[in-house]
Image (cartoon, rainbow, N blue to C red; front, side, top):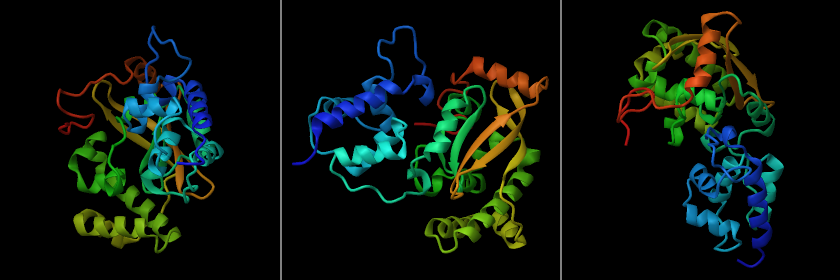
Length: 294
């Protein structure tokens, strides 16, 4: 398309790829890595593109990338808001409207903090509990974020509709988590009144989950800021940790991280988690929560 600055677009993509460390996106550097940042095929994988297509973009060839491709590349390359806008300008695409939900771009301030949290599990989620970004220790502790979009991306939705999601916590803790999820969602629903995403989530949960419908009628309201959680890990067993939330200015995103007081069993388990990493500890053919994969 006339007006697309293919050479500058290619150079910008390469410069951002060189800047991202493999550990920033949950990849192992390995002893034979010859590039300062990510490989082309790694960027393609993170963005859900073919390696050949991304290679053509970095060579300054090919058709004008779509807005969906640009948004995926912005997330994969951890671009700031200004960098994402620059990418859209180079490709001659209109700047995207402010997105919410699992398609949202993690807010730069939260993403910058996430990149610096290398010794504790941390992730960025939306106020509807849709994961946007995870550090490697969060993947090791909680498992990878779901690939799907829409309601299925929300852990709150899956908590009430998919029994396998509850395997992340001991059974005796389930009633408390259900109450906390419901009270948190009611606070979000009040702040985002008439928002179609919130309305659809609440309506679907009330229809599909008797437990949620009963709790919703109790009208408890409380945003989750700090919590004490017990997480069932396939190798470490039950890990008891403090969970903290840092809210974005508009309240739609949260940086969530886990910690444990020094000298506790949880602190020792976190140290061991960094050694275990993200190796596959689930039975063959299943995911982190024991669900069938593939």
